[in-house]
Image (cartoon, rainbow, N blue to C red; front, side, top):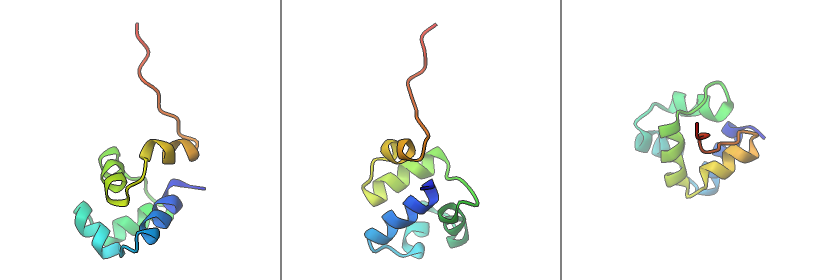
Length: 75
């Protein structure tokens, strides 16, 4: 399942409208729609804000979507 779809499901499970979330993020509803439909990817800052709004673990969401973050390697 893609990140956008998971974000949409998280928004819907919290019973938040696109307007409410886009207002909290300071973006248009169209940008939020594009994120949820997979046309664009949210920035790291937007992902962090969405995690706070939806009360979800963004690192887990990324991992479940095949994106694994790890600390930088020491030289």
